[in-house]
Length: 147
Image (cartoon, rainbow, N blue to C red; front, side, top):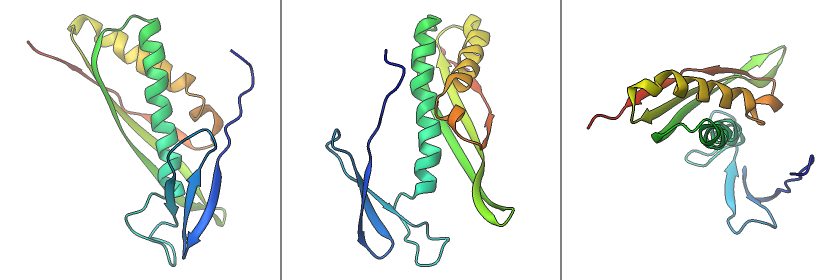
């Protein structure tokens, strides 16, 4: 794999505080807007803050899938809730913290510690988490599927 990769994203203003994200290598356009907490923000539209948290949470999942395969972890399901904290620090807003709450469901109770290890390694290896200044907290839940 190459040591450098580039990801091109374009944004076009549509109206008010709303725009569209696109990329020449992707078919889908995504709407983006100022959050409703800010002046003239729009409700019910994904915001840069949502995308920031989504990038970290999505990276956790994709990294987990690779690490789980490498460790031969047999799992049933992976899901993760994430919450980002936007706060005023030194006179400017920043995403200061992201809490990731992955839930991994496994078949075998003997794999609980391995599953925890795989999730923790995944968070440490996540290239998006490694690229941001926000504090990343991890709250791991492992479930065992019965029957």
